[in-house]
Length: 155
Image 1 (tube, rainbow, N blue to C red):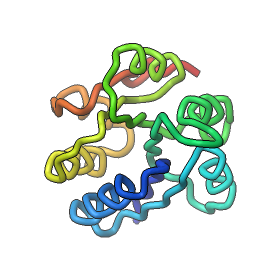
Image 2: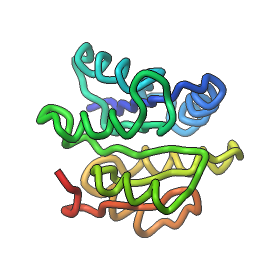
Image 3: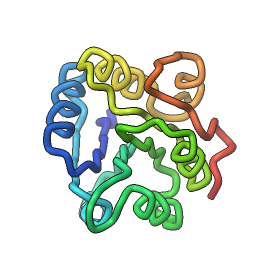
Image 4: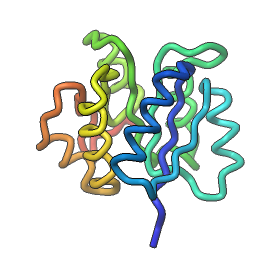
């Protein structure tokens, strides 16, 4: 059986810790890899023998921000198929538009409530694969905005 693998790219250690705790409480079998910026994430992807099923990218990070990393992922044949969820403390429409143009699957405002984060991560964990877009479209969680439904991801 394929183990589920998530990659979280975020320079905020508190947010990373909360994400990891929430994910572990949702499904303790999911492997979570983390990176503190886009450059570190790209290096980690090169090292991994099994690629992640989904990548969550924070926007504002040092060295290589989320936008630059998303562009690099979608420009790389080896990674462009991996769904990417952009995460941010803001929910500005312009940021969502940029994320959509660059090929992100969804945009998630960082929930400050642990239970909401768990609910969001459970949605991702239980619907990984071809059904993820449909699940995100059907299950309305205020913090998650579906950007590129299946078949409409810009490459």
